Amino acid sequence: MKVLFAAPQGGDARWLNALSQALPGAEVRTWEPGDTAFADYAVVWRPERDVLRAREGLKAIFNLGAGVDAILRFEREAPGTLSRNVPVVRLEDTGMAAQMNEYATYAVLRYLRRFDEYEIAQRSAVPQWHVLEPHRHDTFIVAVLGLGVLGTQVAATLASFGLPVRGYSRSKKMLDRIDTFAGEALDACLDGAKVIVNLLPSTPDTDGILNRRAFERLARGAYVVNLARGVHLVEDDLLVALQDGQLAAATLDVFASEPLPPTHRFWREPRITITPHISALTLCEPAVAQIAEKIGALERGEPISGIVDVARGY
Ligand code: NAP
Ligand code: GLV
Image 1: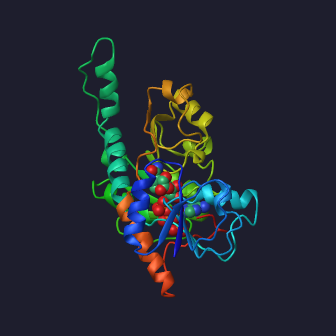
Image 2: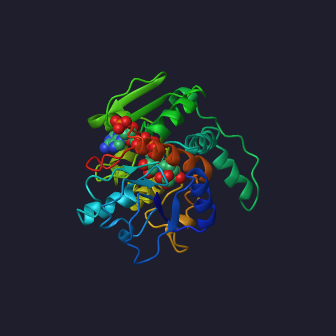
Image 3: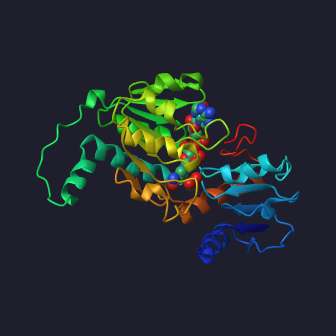
């Protein structure tokens, strides 16, 4: 069995070793420009277009992350880049849900308990000892956009703190302790909410969803936590909403341009907390174990989960 590995990050040796160990007998190689040789499977993260182009013999493309937008964008820009009969398979959890839980919980509780404001007070020229009125739990409504593998767990964890949690997805869900909304009901999900936690995939339907219209539906002085993709956010709308007080603060892990350029306006806005796309990292061993398990199933002719619906976009 031949396995092609293509990812922009360093650490290839770790991935190649892990794949070789998990797939005994497989010949695992790193893609180099010009490599169009046969492979049974491709394991990729944000690959160059040429990695995927004209790979008829492939049995599956495994994406080393939950979001497949980088791959599907090729297909949208140049239809036919992906062979129609080759499934694109994404990672399902592999340790990402626990990380997202930690990150989202930290971000929401930091705002609930107003730690962001105490941090600013401590850093001011004359440090200020000043007790702020706590936010009330019953009006601190959290709208989790995206109720998939990650959003469902994040919503459940936030609800466990006694916060009113709403969830938004494409198809209607029934979830314990979560008020759920679907499809056209985005406005109803956002109305009066105090926090948005975004865990949607990036698709033509969701890009730009964090915009002025959405912010205006929230309670005044609301918070935005974007953990999904930078293109979900209309950057100018965020800055205007922070300036006019409709939004109090934002925590952003993902950006339209990554790494976020040093000259970007977000770096200079104290109410924006920035992290470098780390809310849920792909963990090598669990990711490779899941991929190897799925390759085993495909080789035995068994069905697997996590196959992306290319037309739907996730
Ligand atoms: P998932 O299981 O595919 O869940 C996606 C959710 O979004 C589903 O609930 C889906 O609805 C909903 N959705 C999709 N399109 C929609 C639309 N047009 N309107 C309303 N809801 C829609 O994905 P996941 O594994 O939870 O991951 C979510 C995203 O998180 C990834 O795509 C990725 O962009 C991001 N992510 C970021 C990091 C990071 O480190 N920052 C790490 C991992 C993932 P249905 O349930 O009805 O299908
Ligand atoms: C990371 O951003 C992922 O989609 O897994």
